[in-house]
View (cartoon, rainbow, N blue to C red):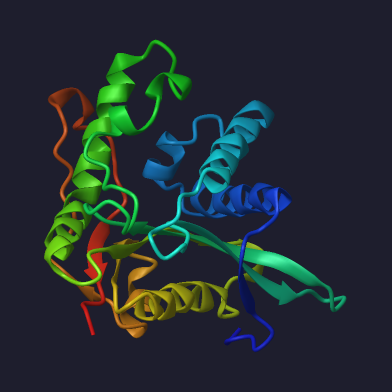
Length: 245
């Protein structure tokens, strides 16, 4: 299928939509691509209990979103809708954009230490080995993002817009939903004063980002892990950025 002119992208304003956001992410990153990183951060995602906990974490992130000095949300959940076969509007995709800055008032602070940013014991109670693995994996994955945010501190505005997550229900893929969700962020970055948009892109997502103005910066992301984690397989990711206008 090609692009669907009926695709609409809107910020999420209702808690019930967050439930659907998680379901879409699970269908995409859990079932379709078996994304090891997403699965590691969502233990039990395919069980009723794990799903409830995942939705709760996502709702907390949505409901506690901060704003910058201009009153703009620093955490933006988006929904992409299409018309189903009956002509009803349904939520087909989701995205999560984050405005990040090292300067207070211009975005949320970059994540330097995962263990300080979230309570890993709620994910894996009494499992320090897995906690170390998550911290090392997250630090490797976001290393270039953090560097980009630090470099932006000398610019105006001193912030970066990061695409943290983008997923489309497999039942609605190839209808232009992902393109609209990503393009929304690129346009929003420009509207917010010419921010740069960045993403850690998978092999599957890279062609889409390239079409929308992102360029790869550096080689494939390398994961620096302790020997006990060396046998864990990771999907290929690269850092991509739009640059400043």
